[in-house]
Image 1 (tube, rainbow, N blue to C red):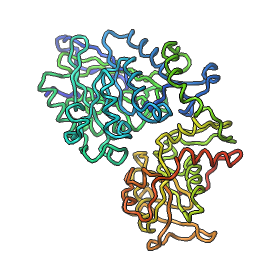
Image 2: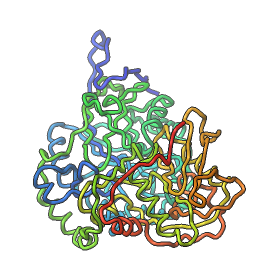
Image 3: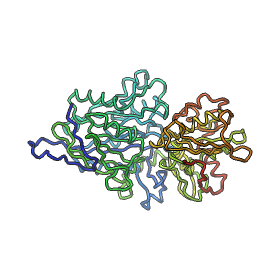
Image 4: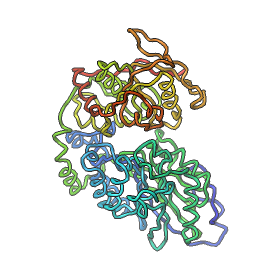
Length: 528
């Protein structure tokens, strides 16, 4: 096992003390990387949702594959040795995925000549079959180290844990890493078993090292906190390209969650936010033993200063034609921006959460339903003020979830809320946005140990305490009702109906009925 050099938490590090030793050959590699693209093939607004052609022409938009194509070409021209990798979640997020599934993502990634990708949880949204179709279509390895797929015939023998590529005469090991709780976050099926990340990565590092590979990169779709733990708990990992938590690392931008790269135990960790808004560019120098002696770079903002490739613009427009009639339809008016960013909706009450939960409850209240619960992770974007198109609504709610109604006890609702606030520190998607319900939680209490300190429900026009023995009629989405995001307590609900209307259509209708929607917060979720 190669010696691991311990580096400080700095964005650019040159190791001291090397000058006294004989000069060794050095190998330089530029790692270009993306993560959490979520089908944003077209430019996005500052809200990470659709951006109009007019705003794009005025230079107000970001990202899109046509700009990303140019940025990657320019970055490749700056380096003799480059690789392009992805940290997962190319799937899901816009009508492009709803309509084409993984087909268009495969085409675009092949055009950009990616060298490798890890499986994100959303790559399992439509089960192993769609993932397999994507893997068959791409010209690069798709990897996942921390799972056993041997019992899943669509993936067995095809989905590998790691691979070796060559660049500039040097072997580079790539290892994939997927969220351990993907079985709760998506639909991998019962035949895929997930394992904890540290030992899974170390096993692949050891295998690659035995093959003589001493430059090892983990493509991790497990979140920044897990990346830190993997770096600290393994030996032999040189770089971790992150994803899943949409973490923005930048050494010079105060909005960054940490330096780019962040070093732990000699491992350089990088992440480039999401949605194609940035292209990560990490320049790494290895010595002859494969140790990192220098690593520096920054995410490149893909704004209007990056020219759009005309061929990609034309191809995206061609593929968008079947979607236009649906998404350009104006369905409502918003009197102010509706905040739906994950930094709000996964940690507390947010405007988009109130809108969606209110819309759900309004649709089924005549059936006797009194409580709505929506997972914050199901809210994928904000909506700006002015006309609201169906495309914007689908961007917020891209998963084609249906309304699900069911009956559970107050004790089950309490357990669901405990689950919902159990991973707030990690900004996980299970945080509950609610309607017909008020709750207070205490972050000082350990998860699932009584964080929920008060729950009130509406009864005869008054807020009254939740009755643990009482039976309540609830509406959620079919993903949550089926146990997604840890809501397993809803699987045994009574009087279940999982086949209501599409959640996006429900919200669009509710917005339309508002005749000028006014976003708001009302204190329905509070911290002690």
